[in-house]
Length: 113
Image 1 (tube, rainbow, N blue to C red):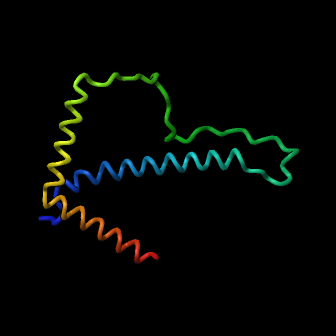
Image 2: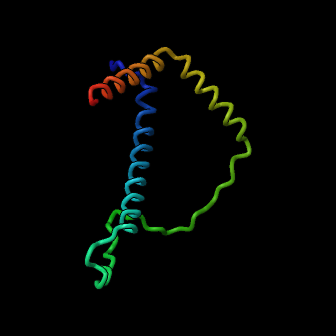
Image 3: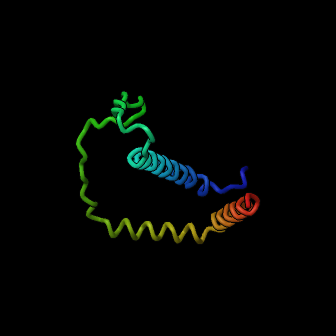
Protein backbone atom coordinates (compact mmCIF):
# COMPACT_ATOMS: atom_id res chain seq x y z
CA UNK A 1 0.00 0.00 0.00
CA UNK A 2 1.18 3.47 -0.75
CA UNK A 3 2.58 5.57 2.07
CA UNK A 4 0.64 8.63 0.88
CA UNK A 5 -2.81 8.79 2.50
CA UNK A 6 -5.78 8.79 0.15
CA UNK A 7 -6.91 12.20 1.38
CA UNK A 8 -3.65 13.80 0.24
CA UNK A 9 -3.93 12.11 -3.14
CA UNK A 10 -7.56 13.16 -3.45
CA UNK A 11 -6.72 16.80 -2.73
CA UNK A 12 -3.57 16.86 -4.87
CA UNK A 13 -5.33 16.53 -8.25
CA UNK A 14 -7.71 19.49 -7.80
CA UNK A 15 -4.88 21.62 -6.42
CA UNK A 16 -2.69 20.75 -9.41
CA UNK A 17 -5.47 21.61 -11.86
CA UNK A 18 -6.12 24.90 -10.10
CA UNK A 19 -2.44 25.86 -10.27
CA UNK A 20 -2.21 24.81 -13.93
CA UNK A 21 -5.24 26.97 -14.83
CA UNK A 22 -3.84 29.92 -12.90
CA UNK A 23 -0.51 29.55 -14.72
CA UNK A 24 -2.20 29.40 -18.11
CA UNK A 25 -4.26 32.52 -17.36
CA UNK A 26 -1.17 34.39 -16.16
CA UNK A 27 0.74 33.32 -19.27
CA UNK A 28 -2.05 34.52 -21.56
CA UNK A 29 -2.25 37.83 -19.69
CA UNK A 30 1.53 38.34 -19.92
CA UNK A 31 1.52 37.64 -23.67
CA UNK A 32 -1.37 40.07 -24.17
CA UNK A 33 0.34 42.82 -22.17
CA UNK A 34 3.63 42.25 -24.00
CA UNK A 35 1.87 42.52 -27.37
CA UNK A 36 0.22 45.79 -26.34
CA UNK A 37 3.41 47.42 -25.09
CA UNK A 38 5.93 46.10 -27.61
CA UNK A 39 7.52 48.63 -29.95
CA UNK A 40 9.37 47.44 -33.01
CA UNK A 41 12.08 49.69 -34.47
CA UNK A 42 11.46 50.61 -38.11
CA UNK A 43 7.87 49.41 -38.11
CA UNK A 44 6.27 52.83 -38.05
CA UNK A 45 5.45 52.83 -41.77
CA UNK A 46 4.17 49.26 -41.87
CA UNK A 47 0.62 48.14 -41.33
CA UNK A 48 -0.02 45.90 -38.41
CA UNK A 49 -0.32 42.25 -39.44
CA UNK A 50 -3.83 40.85 -39.64
CA UNK A 51 -4.87 38.53 -36.85
CA UNK A 52 -4.94 34.91 -37.95
CA UNK A 53 -7.53 32.35 -37.05
CA UNK A 54 -7.71 31.51 -33.36
CA UNK A 55 -6.01 28.28 -32.34
CA UNK A 56 -8.22 25.18 -32.30
CA UNK A 57 -8.11 25.00 -28.52
CA UNK A 58 -9.41 28.56 -28.09
CA UNK A 59 -12.56 28.83 -26.03
CA UNK A 60 -15.70 29.53 -28.01
CA UNK A 61 -18.57 31.19 -26.17
CA UNK A 62 -21.76 29.45 -27.11
CA UNK A 63 -24.00 30.38 -24.19
CA UNK A 64 -24.41 33.58 -22.18
CA UNK A 65 -22.98 33.69 -18.70
CA UNK A 66 -25.53 32.70 -16.09
CA UNK A 67 -25.25 33.84 -12.51
CA UNK A 68 -26.44 31.33 -9.96
CA UNK A 69 -27.80 32.52 -6.63
CA UNK A 70 -26.07 31.11 -3.54
CA UNK A 71 -27.78 28.18 -1.88
CA UNK A 72 -30.25 28.89 0.90
CA UNK A 73 -28.30 26.74 3.35
CA UNK A 74 -24.96 28.51 2.85
CA UNK A 75 -24.24 28.73 6.58
CA UNK A 76 -24.84 24.98 6.93
CA UNK A 77 -22.41 24.30 4.09
CA UNK A 78 -19.79 26.54 5.74
CA UNK A 79 -20.29 24.73 9.06
CA UNK A 80 -19.90 21.33 7.40
CA UNK A 81 -16.78 22.52 5.58
CA UNK A 82 -15.21 23.74 8.82
CA UNK A 83 -16.04 20.40 10.47
CA UNK A 84 -14.42 18.53 7.57
CA UNK A 85 -11.26 20.67 7.79
CA UNK A 86 -11.07 20.01 11.53
CA UNK A 87 -11.37 16.26 10.88
CA UNK A 88 -8.53 16.49 8.36
CA UNK A 89 -6.36 18.40 10.82
CA UNK A 90 -7.06 15.79 13.49
CA UNK A 91 -6.15 12.89 11.19
CA UNK A 92 -2.54 11.83 11.90
CA UNK A 93 -2.08 10.33 8.43
CA UNK A 94 -3.12 13.58 6.79
CA UNK A 95 -0.87 15.66 9.07
CA UNK A 96 2.10 13.34 8.46
CA UNK A 97 1.54 13.46 4.70
CA UNK A 98 1.25 17.22 4.77
CA UNK A 99 4.41 17.60 6.84
CA UNK A 100 6.22 15.20 4.51
CA UNK A 101 5.15 17.26 1.48
CA UNK A 102 6.31 20.49 3.12
CA UNK A 103 9.63 18.87 4.07
CA UNK A 104 10.21 17.67 0.49
CA UNK A 105 9.33 21.10 -0.92
CA UNK A 106 11.81 22.77 1.43
CA UNK A 107 14.52 20.25 0.51
CA UNK A 108 13.83 20.80 -3.19
CA UNK A 109 13.95 24.57 -2.71
CA UNK A 110 17.23 24.33 -0.81
CA UNK A 111 18.70 22.05 -3.47
CA UNK A 112 17.89 24.48 -6.30
CA UNK A 113 19.49 27.42 -4.49
